[in-house]
Length: 270
Image (cartoon, rainbow, N blue to C red; front, side, top):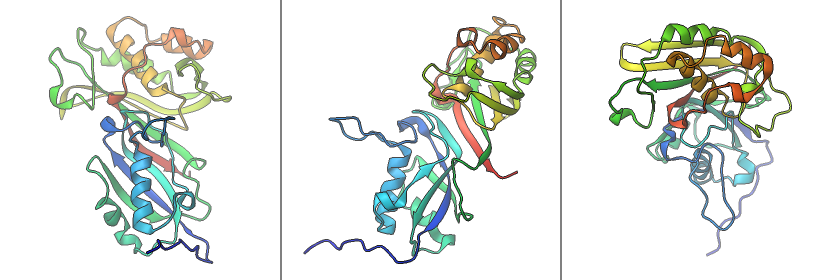
């Protein structure tokens, strides 16, 4: 018995927009990766694409699955946005449930909708927010270890950290907060807000939130590492000004590990 060949519909496919959440602990990031001579690595894009191919009987090349943000290995998301093109027989109000029934238990489609005409999940982003969680206590965060960075030995000064964080707001050359080899010719970004917060629900945690038009490779993790150095008293808040003026990565703090980072939301339009 021969396998039925996919026959394209004469009508153009519909573009769909998905909002996704995932625990990044067991993923090698968002983007598919197939190292030569090895099995493909487990990625969010790879898992989602495999489900969509089976569910919609649509080949990979026709789906054109894209994600708005290339989250790194170990990074989490509450509001990743993806798009794909398909002739979907499933009513839109049932699509998210149908996908979720087939996804692994460390990822979920939070919503599915028909995308606006011409929608580009990457090119049309106007704003996105990340949160970096720091566990500031001597004892280990055993039950939260895959969601926080453990900072011990110092009680962080949140006031000093916020003084430094406010200096990031505005349009700047942010190359001093990017990893080497970031690959971007344009290193000017607009930061709309940056705060250091405490939350009674998590009494030992300090959260760094940052909203901006876009971010360079490892930028949020380097900013969080720099703010921790301020909170520990190793840097003055004015160190942020020096880094922005010089674009010198060596003046910034360390790149913190990925597990404390979460992509919270992505916005489109004004």
